[in-house]
Image (cartoon, rainbow, N blue to C red):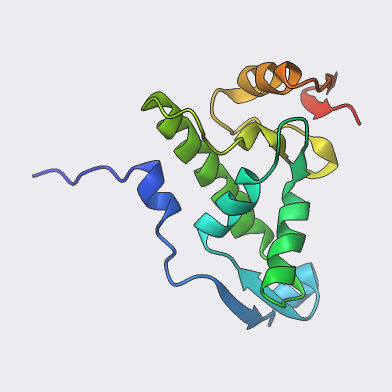
Length: 149
């Protein structure tokens, strides 16, 4: 019998033992420096994204700062934080398709320098539509898109 596909909501609520705080060691110190690193739980990333009100924006680095502060760590893992933001975005899209009205506003979470994340549901077109609907101006620089600050 085929295994049931895991929903985005299930992925969002699967903490896999996180959050965890641990010292940065070995080769990681060259890339990230020294100190303590927090690997958040996916739902923690979603909770921060969910609080961003209409007309406001947050970058993935600002989310990482909030997570580091919350866990008394020097920084939050950029890889897992980005992956968990992506999971939160798809869980929100899944909820919206199920008819839910209040979803995590993933389009308000941007990459560094206020760049739109083309990997979010619906791609760039969906993000531009949602952001412009909230009064933001999106500009294109070569093949990348940014909210004009």
